[in-house]
Picture 1 (spheres, rainbow, N blue to C red):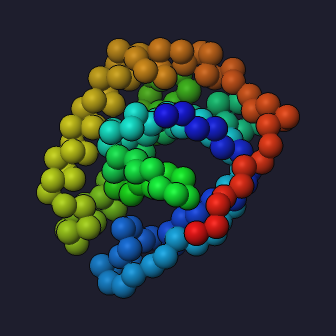
Picture 2 (cartoon, rainbow, N blue to C red):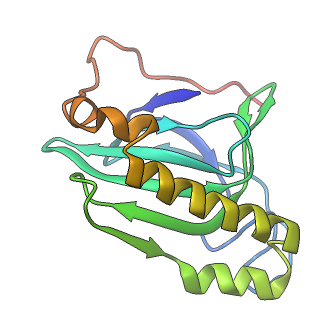
Length: 164
């Protein structure tokens, strides 16, 4: 699955919350309306993968690649749902430099049991898979130069969300 996102409506959980549990491991939350802004996004997500590969763009061009580790996507009446598993990989546009992000937050949600042992094993396999894809310049990285030159077509309409 590939998705392009420009400024527009979205739904998200409150910041600092994962899988319905606040940062302290207590409470519940609901998805809230939001507004995607500041960047354009191309998202590449194999349906059963525990990650998505994202390309973030600003007016100047490709800002960075970003790998979000998340549960496999589930099709719903309102679109697609997944759960963010907190750890991420940020990759420079030239694909030569990368940095792990939010390792401390990942350790925290592991301690709270929000990310289960089974999910942790899936994330570890996904990390290895993503690093292999990056090293082999496979999947979207095979056409990195072409993707770096991509631009949003202004004729495309702003997406809308179905009411839930």
